[in-house]
Image 1 (cartoon, helix red, strand yellow):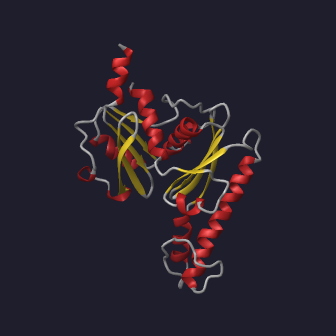
Image 2 (cartoon, helix red, strand yellow):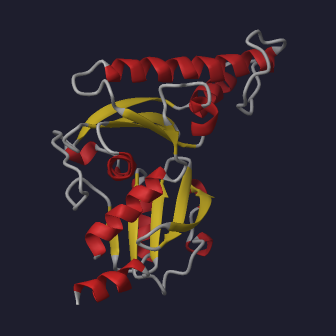
Image 3 (cartoon, one colour):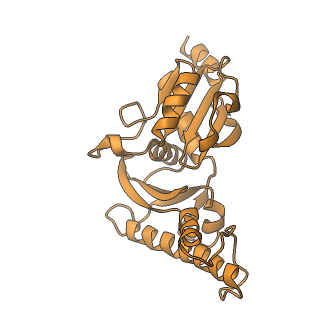
Length: 252
């Protein structure tokens, strides 16, 4: 009986939604894997721009750090929707004070890294902010670090100076910038790698974290991790994988 129910659940259609300050990632999934993903700018969210039909879904898992977007989406989504927070069944402990302040995306990252890579672990998520989320050897989310995101830093330079342009962040051709854009690319990419390396080194000096696996996700994960040996893995779907695993725990 249990096996039949388990088999049926594994093929049910799930919608995973990760609402960030800049973009919202939608994932169509089964309990086994993420099948398709679509990204929509969070500022453009509307009922018409939902990329998947909601009437044929068996469940929705929503992680959001944008309260306005959360309220809108809950009006459009079916009742069988789980909103991620520290009170639901995550499969990882959350022995933190002020658990309401923990971003839902960070909880999803902790769930995914613990299940897929083991613990202790550190997730480096390159979003509007770059976050470092720590899971200890007891499979508990214990906190982390928040720093300005790479785009936030380059946008700030453009907005607060008269002559510095807006740049598309990419790997610099030389460590010595030959022009303004080249110099900004060096400062952005190589400077940002320095920030990531130093924070990871400091985290691994904490008790119990010296052998923590580091997994990167988010928009600039591949670019920055390329020259950061302290990051062992890059998984662009890590947050959505965490939402999928939360669905398995809470809908089955």
